Length: 73
Image (cartoon, rainbow, N blue to C red; front, side):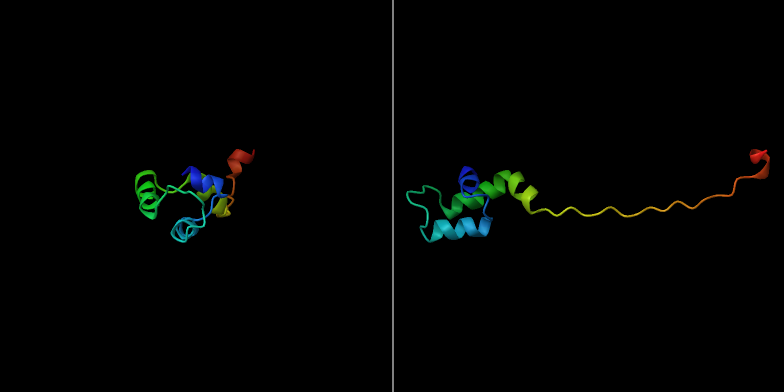
């Protein structure tokens, strides 16, 4: 939603609270509009990117195998 981008990518709960308490002047968006947009478009990508934490990958250790003596010669 453009409104969510203007507000600095606030969470969906905060956005609903702003609309419910009339904290945004002349806002044509309703709470039902927010719910519909979430159902149709899913979560905002920019919002998810900003709140997702990078997880470190698992360490894969490879065991060394003894080289056969004919190959060493």
